[in-house]
Image 1 (cartoon, rainbow, N blue to C red):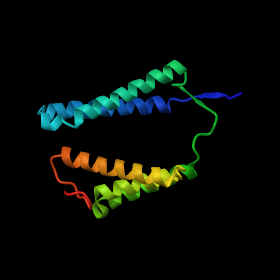
Image 2 (tube, rainbow, N blue to C red; image 1 turned 120 degrees about the vertical axis):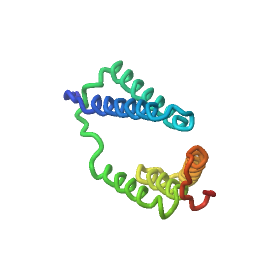
Image 3 (cartoon, rainbow, N blue to C red; image 1 turned 135 degrees about the vertical axis):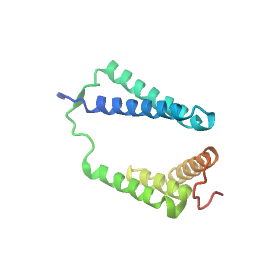
Length: 151
């Protein structure tokens, strides 16, 4: 039988995420309600708020919003490499370019999480990395450093 301890951490994180998102959105609207200013901020804010609401609704329905099972969670030795990988990703953006750094980050993350199908790993990393880089290069009004895709 699993015992559950009362835990407010997940709820606090969800509330902080929703609060920060609302604050950022309201500040962006206050500064300028021009379409160019809100083109990325408004849809992303709505997606984040919808995900937070969905997570709260699911956890309330399951009765697990304020409880955490005693399974110990993911061990630290599996979390720290992901933190290190993300740090390396951010540091390498200027050197490798957003496109190549994103492809490598996704591929190495999938490797860390146990993916061993090389075709899936390579295909997903290339599609997601270059797709994301192309999307942001087209949507954002300032140039992003790219290594393979045109700036």
